[in-house]
Image 1 (tube, helix red, strand yellow):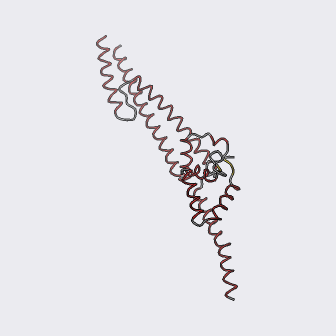
Image 2: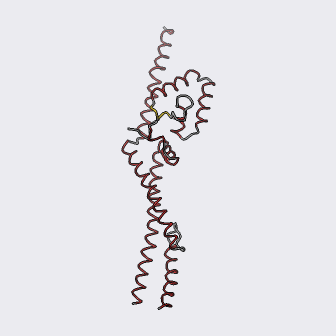
Image 3: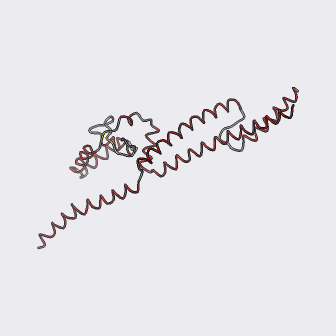
Length: 98
Length: 126
């Protein structure tokens, strides 16, 4: 009797239990990843858009930096201070001319 | 419909059937490392099974679509990141948009304050 049951148990574990566990985890894994085709297309679009906007903004920043040498991109509080100083000098210039 | 999150065989960089180069392209690992690992795995006792897995993968998986062949390095890395950790890349894209927003508002502040003050000065001169 032992000789019959042991192979059956081993074979059933090997050919039913193991694939079951593997497929169970595969489905779990797929559900957890869960990036649908719409999500993927959306992500593709957003990635592309971010890169294009980034490029255009860099171009604009370069142009602005060329026009206004004292403007530094990337610091949110400095421009306003620089502007006041710059404007002060500008107005002096105008008043001198006027 | 080709998808970025699917596994494809990479026939262009293939040594044999393109499974290892496909894995390398999918995960972002170096193709040589994947190949050496496959060979080592075969020699240390996985003999028939790695080969069977290789053949089955080569048989089931499709070839990489043409439009994915000429992707830029940056795009390739981006999609490898998406496949590994979708959540992280979504956050990454959001942070890029935030960065764009911040830089744009810097420019905006600079130009609006600049021009408004300029206009005030011109008005006061009249």
